[in-house]
Amino acid sequence: MTGRHARDEPERLTLRLPRVTLEALAWGPADGRLVVALHGFPDTAHTWRHLGPFLARRGFRVVAPHTRGYAPSAVPDDGCFHVAALMADAAAIPEAVDWTGSDPVLVGHDWGAITAHALGAHPDSPYERVVAMAVPPLATMDSRSPRLLARQARHSWYIGWHQLPLLPERFLDREVAKLWRDWSPGYDAGTDLPHVLAALDEPANRAAAVGYYRAIRAPWRVPSSYAGWKRTWDGTPTVPTLYLHGADDGCLEPGFADGLVAKLPAGSRVERVVDAGHFLQVEQPDVVNGLVAQFLETPFHGT
Image 1 (cartoon, rainbow, N blue to C red):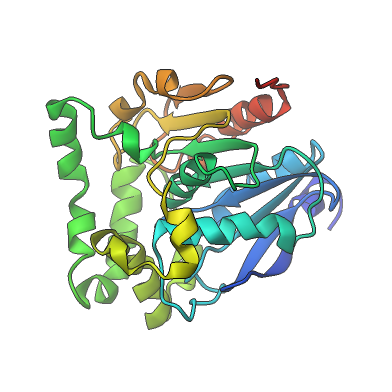
Image 2 (tube, helix red, strand yellow):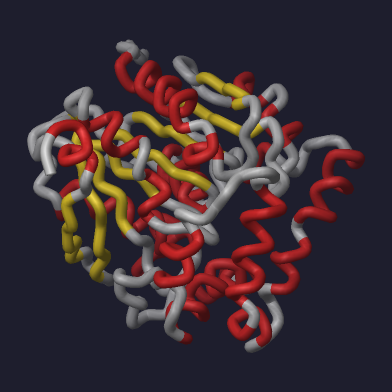
């Protein structure tokens, strides 16, 4: 294979982090500016198949792990799927790939966005900029209008469903297909669903993916090793942030992006992507890629 398509094929990396081993896809030169990209639910690292090669052609080094519990990454021995654990994993990746440069960037979608916001709020985060998609900072969502919150409650049925024992795992294949249909109306997920179902093929992987949601109900069960990260798990970034939201998102109401830029630090941007639902990075890759590249390549002089 030669030319552009050869360059678009990802490398496979093994990231040996302090508490879990993750498998990752990577694009771009090893000495390029580091971009770590985190997927959400129900998705995999393959969600970055457009952004990764695009940034690689601009000289960036993009590393996209399958997050803890999603095959081929390991299910962690500690069984923790709280945001604090996701933060710890993401924070350890620059060292795991021997990154010694400046201005690394964390990109996240869905649960990856929650993780990115949380790390963007933490003083010990190695990341100097954040790009988040489809989920705004959690702390900014509780002050919205009752009407918006009521509409969102109808979308969020799956969170309660995931609190039930056994049944979510048993019917996860059906749920995954339904969520992609509902969350990104009109999008053909034929390329994406096989990756997701392969990542969640084993019972332990299914329990892990559902476990991200079950961790919400018992935040006190976070192991002490993650306690230092937990304090900003629902925080709002203090570093420059690009936030993107699909105008047709069927998972999270686009109205949550309204007025958000005023709550973010200097140098931040908020953009609504038209003709895109929840999985905007694969629905409108040219638009998303361009917005991300522009944000990353714009110098920011903080105070």
